[in-house]
Amino acid sequence: MNTGNGKRIIGRKELFAGLGILLFFVFGFLLRVPDVLEQSAQSNGYSGHSAMVVLAGLIWAICWWASGIIPDWCTALLLQGIFIAVAKIPFASAFGAFSKSTLWLMIGTFCIAAAISKTGLLRRISLNLMKLFPPNFRGQTLALLVVGAVCGPLMPSSTAKALLGGKLAYSNADLLEYEHNSRGRVGLFMAAWTGFYLIEPMFMSSSFMAYSMIGSLPEGHSEISWGQWFVAMLPWSIMMLVGMYFVIKLLYNPKEQRAFSAEYIRGECRALGKMGRQEKITAIILCICLAFWILEKRTGISAGLVALMGGMLCFATGVLERREISTSINWGFTLFVGVVLNMGDIFISVGISNWLLHLFDPILTRINSPVLLVILFFSITVAMRFLLSSQTAVLALLTGVFSTVALATGMHPFIAGLVIYTAIPVCILYFQNPSYLATIQSMDGTVEHSYTVKGHVLYLLVALSACLLSIPYWQLLGYQK
Image (cartoon, rainbow, N blue to C red; front, side, top):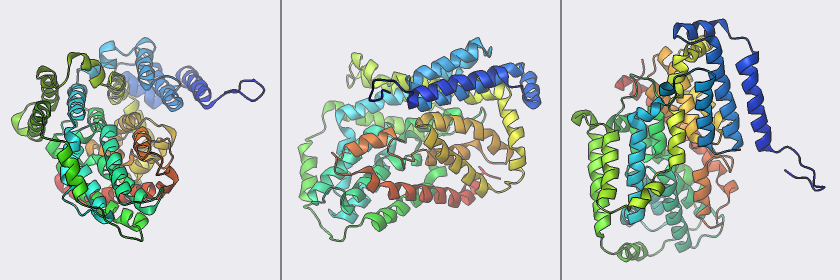
C-alpha cells in the first residue's frame, strides 16, 4: 500500500502473511510441546514435534487464507508440503483425500453442472415453476423461495444458481416498477438469495460444500446418502422456508401492492422454444443421477461413481466438448478441497484430536445439553466467518475439529457438520461471501448491501432456531443421544 508521498506502508495482506509466518515458527519450533499432545502423538507413531508442526502449519494457512495473498489452493498445497517435509507425514496420508469418492463426486458434478448451465435447463425449469405463482410481491416472494429450493438439488454450483435467482428477482422488480433500494426490490432480492442459496443445506447435491462437509467427517461416520441427508434436514428446511417468508414479509413488504401481467412469464417460457437435443440429454442424465443418488443405500452404487459416469456421459453425448474439460471443472477449488478434506484425518493421526478433546473436557463436562452444543457450534462458525472468507475452509476445518467433540458428547458428527453448514453463508459484512457479491451485482446497482443486513441477521436467528427445534427429531433418528 502506498501513501501520498510515495512511501509504502504494510497492508492487510502483508500483515496477515507476516503474522502467519511468525506464528508458524513460534508454535512449530519455540513453544514447548504439551505433555498430553506428546503422549497422544507417540501413541500413534508420531512425535510431539510433528504434531506441533501440523498445528503451526494450520495456523499459518488460516492467516494466509485470510490474507488472500496467494490463491487458496496454493496455500493448501504448500501446507501439505510442510506436513510431508517437516512433520514427516507420509505422502499417501497427506494427499489421501484424492483417493476418496467425495472428491470424484465433486469432479463429476462439476461436469453435470456445466452441462445444465450450458443448455439453459435450469432457467427453463425455474420459469415454468414461477408461472404457477401470483404475479405480485407476495406471490413472487413465495415463488423465488420455493423455486430456488426445488432447483437446489438439480445443480451444485451455488454461484450459478444464485445468479439465476438474482436475475429473476431483478426482472420481476422491474416489472413491478420498484425503485432502487425500495422495500419491494430488496425483498425480492432477499427471496431469491434465500431460495437459490441460503436454503442449500436442504439437499446434499445443492452445493459442492456439502460434499466437502461429508468428506471431512471421521472414518466410519461419513457414509451419508442423499436420502439420509434429505430426511435429516426436512424439518429444518420447512422451518427455514416458512420463517424466511415471514421475515421478508415483515421487513420488506411494500406498502403499495402491485401486480404485473402473468403473460410476461408465459412469454419468457415460450421464448425458450422447444427443448433441444442437448437439453433433453442433460435432463435425462440429471434425472438418472438423482435417482441413483436417492437410492444409493439400496443399489449399493457409490454416489461418486454415479457422478463420474454422469459427467462422462455429458462429454460422450456431445453436450460438452472435449476442450471444455479444462473449463467445466474448477481445478483450483478441487485441489483446495482435496487438501482441506484430509485435515481431520491428519489431526487424528498425529494426536491433535485427542489433545483438543482433553482441552475441551472442562467445557464439555458443563455442556451436557445438545441445545448448548448446537449454539456453541453455530456461534463459533459465525465468528470464524468474520475472520476467514473461505467458506469451504471454515466448513471442513470446523467439521474435522468439532467431530471429536460431538462424538464425546453423544452427537453424531454429521449433525455437527450440518449445524456448521447452516451458519456458513453469513454475509453481514459485504465481503464475507463471494457468491453474494456476484448475486447482488446481478441487480445492476439497484440494491445496496446495507439494505439487506437486517435480513441476513434474521437469517442467522431463524437458522439457529430451526437447528434447535430439529434436535428432538434428530434424536428420534438416532443422531443424538
